[in-house]
Image (cartoon, rainbow, N blue to C red):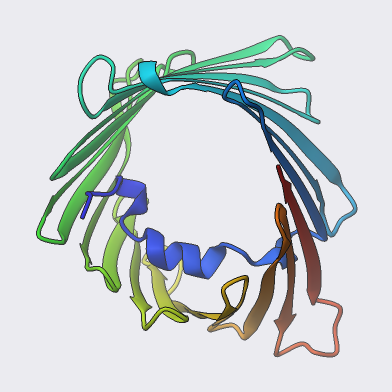
Length: 283
């Protein structure tokens, strides 16, 4: 099993707890299109529960033989971003990224350089912001027979100062995984567990404790049930009594519908509940 990036050590549980819950936006529309010359377009529009509408246009060109990917995005905040990726070209397992941003309204610019290096038992990354600081964030994970250990650190070059550090350990197996992470300078601790019970049922949980702010442990549990090959339902609830449910169905070729809702089980008489829908069109 491949060694994940540091941020993905608890990915299975985090995805189960956070992805495909459509109540976070009142409405979401996503349109994807692929052309014969390896150019893909994606348009995403969201309407928040506060009636704010945002949209983003993304174009991506992929040249697989040369390991080159070129991505351009433009959103309703009039922010432009260009990303250039070069993978497995300079060395096997090495990917280099250049990310360049521009805000025309303020003439603000951004420039970042990232490196990803992945081998059978190692996954390391470096993220460098060239114009702010500059700053660098480094992380690395080593793995052996499913066991994982990783650490990350941030560094401000101008101030010669460490800006933050985290650590994590985990274990990945084909049908289950577990992880313990310590973030925010080892002050926020999380323990997560994911289990693929069978081809239809997945379950997971996560406990979080912030040593700086509270003695209370936050808890979330979630489950996913595949109704048939084209649809599934998900549900989750946390220790504060906030529950969320979601339904996803593949209506026909290229069309997916998602419906979700969240409820505060301790405040049923108040307007704290949220409902959202999502349509994805792909061609």
